[in-house]
Image 1 (cartoon, rainbow, N blue to C red):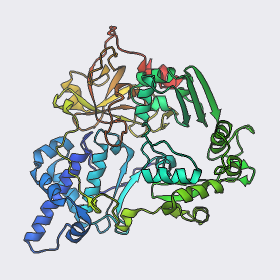
Image 2 (image 1 turned 180 degrees about the horizontal axis):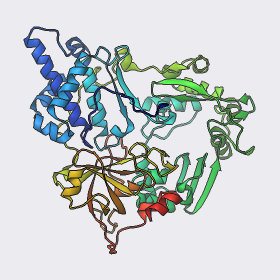
Image 3 (image 1 turned 135 degrees about the horizontal axis):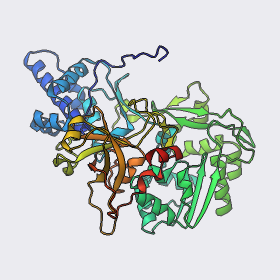
Image 4 (image 1 turned 180 degrees about the vertical axis):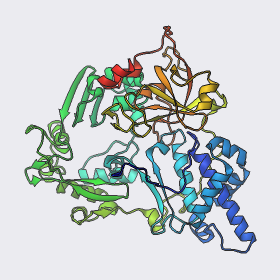
Amino acid sequence: MLTRSSTPIGTQYHQVKVGGDAAALKGIMKALLDLDDAALKAGQARVLDTAFIETHTHGFEAFVEDLRATGWDAIAAASGLTREALEGIAVVYAKAERPIICYGMGLTQHRTGTSNVEQIVALLLMRGAIGREGAGICPLRGHSNVQGDRTVGVTERPSKAFLDKLGEVFGFEPPRQPGRSVVDTIAAMRDGQCKSLISLGGNLAVAAPDTAVAFDAFRRLELNVSIATKLNRTHLLTGGEAFILPCLGRTEMDKQAGGQQSVTVEDSMSMVHASRGFIKPASEHLRSEPAIIAGIAKATLQPSAAVDWDAMIGNYDLIRDKIEVVMPELFRAYNEQIRQPGGFRLYNSASERVWKTPTGKANFVPFCGLEEDEHFSDPLVLRLTTMRSHDQYNTTIYGLDDRYRSLFGRRDVIFMNAQDIQRAGLTPGARVDLWSFHQPKAGVRPRVLRGLTVVNYPLPEGSCGAYYPEANSLIPLEHRDPDSLTPSYKSVPIRVLPAENADDGSDTTIATEGLTGKAQAAHA
């Protein structure tokens, strides 16, 4: 980086077709089986860890049967990779003593996101690489809240054991019915079933899929409360009555009655450590996020002997003490451990080869088939992936330059493969409209993103890319992983058509609502 020259960061680079992750993984595992067959026939050491598979796993026979029945031509077509490429990966993987498979959040942002992760786990299980020191699965996620919230039980589907303990410790009966995911919450707001919202941080309306639906849902709220460190576009969707409660950022000093406080964060390696702000707060009137929540609770709820709101805000150690009581397996000696250099590693049963599953073992889960959406049988329907630029953090766009893709000064583009450009009867630089291939419900405007410029880019054939959050308008609210409920920002079926000016009843304002002023001007 200092010399402004390139540096190799990998010995192999393979560009998987958008939505082809599971197919590529199946190809690698199929090749691994072939290597194991050859080793067995030659009387050599097995490639598969058969002792681990027999002792610690369930469902391997059915899994292998599915792999052997899947043809190489179909795998190559769905993954965008050749058989030779996938076999080359398998050879390298077979020789690895401590393999680690890393993946980004994009892998989960498909309708098959859960299945994609299950196939990564299966690939590791085949070589006994779960619970082996220095090996395993490594999800590379954005920031601490992605991991930490779920770790301490912030989920719409808490377990019975967690709710029982929560009620015992705090002296109340927790609601037992499941809550709502983000997508379900926005749908409930749209349908008038959810009339008030308190959100902690984020630019939710812009980050959500189905931009027009999400914006309208926020406008329907009777009460909208946002606890945030920075203003964003969602704050302008006020509804009936809206409150913005500015709070301290994590880098700002948080001084309470008991002195300066620390919060805890969890990183991608399951390490938990203390984080203390060091910057003078932007205003003396700012309160911390915990203090705001406790203040609302104190003003709303009846006094409780189990919860001393003032004491816990004066000393965050008391909050951590409660977390430890509710979740002793994960947070034993919580306050003592975070004061150790580097913090502490959360207990993970799988790393100890303790399998907390109904079978009592690690389960092989076949991915039946290869394609994730029937829409892609049409050669003119492309798989859209949404993506961020270099000058962007989440939904915040700092500038119009994208050094990742050598595109400067604009974001109103669609990246397409040369063959797909030609097949659609287009040329690089042409102005086009993107149409969502999902058929809208009766009375719903077609989803279309207008006036983008075609950029020739070396994507796999059948794949295309546009920027997030601008392209969120093309993604139906219901287009998500049915297991994790994560919105599917990837593998969105679209048609790319020459730009039109005719009024067809579609919402032509969606395209620019989430952009900065400069980006809107560029888009115009």
